[in-house]
Every structure is written in structure tokens, then in C-alpha cells.
Length: 138
Ligand SMILES: [Zn+2]
Image 1 (cartoon, protein in one colour):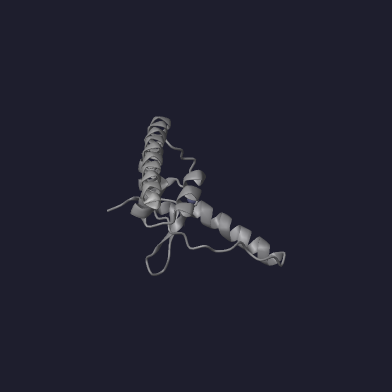
Image 2 (cartoon, helix red, strand yellow):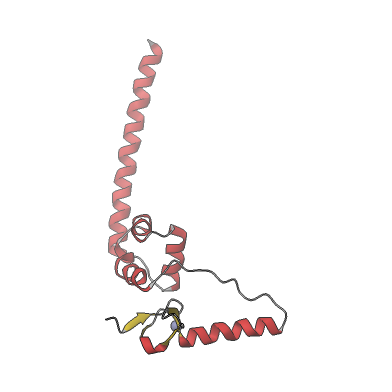
């Protein structure tokens, strides 16, 4: 039985009593504090005749955030986005919101790898071009 849940808005791991539960037994993804803040903003907008902030259904649940926190530093965004089933844009936005960053050592290693790859590809291309030259002359 899970007693704690991560709030989707503030990212804090809180006891379940800090979350509102709907009549059907569904636990809201935001903690009570964030939910109150959200409805306050909503009411304020209604009162001033403004449009309330867009309600976006987030693809991020607690498990995904835990994975993101664990793997973001040493996994490429493409790979992680694929694993979590989210877009890379969503992934980097969320990582930024959570204040996550890449591991510097891992990043420099990755850069070295891609440099080697770039050199390799360049050589390959040169070789192919040479071959083409030869066949042109024939
Ligand atoms: Zn919260």
C-alpha cells in the first residue's frame, strides 16, 4: 500500500492525506496546497472576467517523475523520452521545472563520443565521394 504520493505541481513527496480524494476514490495529482492555489487563481480570473489559465492534462505521474529524477543526468533526452512515453520537449521542460541537469562527466564523455562519430562519418563521406569520382571518370 502506497502511503506517499508525489505532487505533480510542486514535486514534493507527501502523505496521501495531503491530497484530495474525489467521491469516486480518485486521488488528485496535485497536493491540497497546490489545488487550493489553483482554484484561487481560477476564481480570481473568473471574478476579473479573465480567462483562467489553460488546463493542461499532464502526462507526468509520480512514477515518471521518479524515473526522470533518477535517469535524467546520465541518459540522453531522446532515449528517456522514448522510455517514459513523452515528447522530448515535454521531457526537457519538466526537467527544467524540477531543476535537473545533466551529469558533467557523462556529458563530456558523450560529447567525445559524438565527436568521434562525426569524424568517422566525415571519413566515410570522403571515401564515398572518392569512389564516385572514380566512377564518373569511367
Ligand atoms: Zn503540490
